[in-house]
Image (tube, rainbow, N blue to C red; front, side):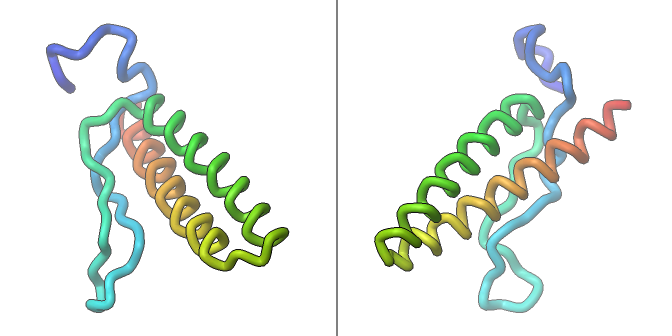
Length: 95
Protein backbone atom coordinates (compact mmCIF):
# COMPACT_ATOMS: atom_id res chain seq x y z
CA UNK A 1 0.00 0.00 0.00
CA UNK A 2 2.56 2.58 1.12
CA UNK A 3 5.77 2.47 -0.91
CA UNK A 4 7.73 3.94 2.05
CA UNK A 5 6.69 1.20 4.49
CA UNK A 6 9.38 -1.20 5.72
CA UNK A 7 9.29 -4.63 4.08
CA UNK A 8 8.33 -6.43 7.30
CA UNK A 9 5.03 -4.51 7.51
CA UNK A 10 1.86 -5.61 5.83
CA UNK A 11 2.61 -9.31 5.51
CA UNK A 12 -0.95 -10.09 6.60
CA UNK A 13 -2.48 -7.16 4.74
CA UNK A 14 -3.75 -3.72 5.67
CA UNK A 15 -6.76 -2.33 7.48
CA UNK A 16 -9.46 -1.20 5.07
CA UNK A 17 -11.06 1.46 7.25
CA UNK A 18 -14.66 0.32 6.98
CA UNK A 19 -15.25 -0.94 10.52
CA UNK A 20 -16.87 1.37 13.05
CA UNK A 21 -17.53 1.07 16.76
CA UNK A 22 -19.33 2.78 19.62
CA UNK A 23 -22.75 3.83 18.41
CA UNK A 24 -23.66 7.49 18.48
CA UNK A 25 -26.91 8.89 19.81
CA UNK A 26 -27.69 9.72 16.16
CA UNK A 27 -29.19 6.66 14.50
CA UNK A 28 -26.82 5.02 12.02
CA UNK A 29 -23.76 6.97 13.20
CA UNK A 30 -20.73 5.73 15.14
CA UNK A 31 -18.15 7.58 17.21
CA UNK A 32 -15.05 5.79 15.90
CA UNK A 33 -13.79 4.17 12.68
CA UNK A 34 -10.62 2.18 12.08
CA UNK A 35 -8.25 4.12 9.83
CA UNK A 36 -7.41 2.46 6.50
CA UNK A 37 -3.85 1.57 5.57
CA UNK A 38 -2.57 0.30 8.90
CA UNK A 39 -0.60 -2.91 9.06
CA UNK A 40 -3.05 -5.76 9.88
CA UNK A 41 -0.58 -7.64 12.05
CA UNK A 42 0.03 -4.51 14.14
CA UNK A 43 -3.74 -3.91 14.39
CA UNK A 44 -4.17 -7.47 15.69
CA UNK A 45 -1.38 -6.95 18.24
CA UNK A 46 -3.09 -3.78 19.45
CA UNK A 47 -6.43 -5.59 19.63
CA UNK A 48 -4.77 -8.19 21.85
CA UNK A 49 -3.49 -5.44 24.16
CA UNK A 50 -6.95 -3.87 24.33
CA UNK A 51 -8.50 -7.23 25.18
CA UNK A 52 -5.92 -7.88 27.91
CA UNK A 53 -6.76 -4.49 29.41
CA UNK A 54 -10.49 -5.16 29.10
CA UNK A 55 -10.10 -8.51 30.83
CA UNK A 56 -8.21 -6.94 33.72
CA UNK A 57 -10.63 -4.02 34.02
CA UNK A 58 -13.67 -6.30 34.01
CA UNK A 59 -12.18 -8.57 36.67
CA UNK A 60 -11.24 -5.69 38.96
CA UNK A 61 -14.54 -3.96 38.25
CA UNK A 62 -16.55 -7.00 39.30
CA UNK A 63 -14.39 -7.93 42.28
CA UNK A 64 -14.24 -4.38 43.66
CA UNK A 65 -17.80 -3.44 42.66
CA UNK A 66 -16.56 -0.68 40.31
CA UNK A 67 -19.12 -0.39 37.48
CA UNK A 68 -17.02 2.25 35.72
CA UNK A 69 -14.30 -0.37 35.13
CA UNK A 70 -16.86 -2.80 33.71
CA UNK A 71 -18.03 -0.10 31.28
CA UNK A 72 -14.39 0.65 30.38
CA UNK A 73 -13.93 -3.06 29.61
CA UNK A 74 -17.02 -2.96 27.40
CA UNK A 75 -15.66 -0.03 25.37
CA UNK A 76 -12.16 -1.52 25.11
CA UNK A 77 -13.66 -4.80 23.89
CA UNK A 78 -15.71 -3.01 21.26
CA UNK A 79 -12.61 -1.18 19.98
CA UNK A 80 -10.62 -4.44 19.89
CA UNK A 81 -13.39 -6.13 17.91
CA UNK A 82 -13.41 -3.29 15.40
CA UNK A 83 -9.63 -3.59 14.94
CA UNK A 84 -9.84 -7.36 14.47
CA UNK A 85 -12.78 -7.17 12.05
CA UNK A 86 -11.13 -4.47 9.94
CA UNK A 87 -7.77 -6.27 9.85
CA UNK A 88 -9.60 -9.45 8.86
CA UNK A 89 -11.29 -7.65 5.97
CA UNK A 90 -7.95 -6.32 4.81
CA UNK A 91 -6.35 -9.74 5.04
CA UNK A 92 -9.03 -11.17 2.75
CA UNK A 93 -8.69 -8.31 0.26
CA UNK A 94 -4.98 -9.07 -0.13
CA UNK A 95 -5.69 -12.72 -1.14
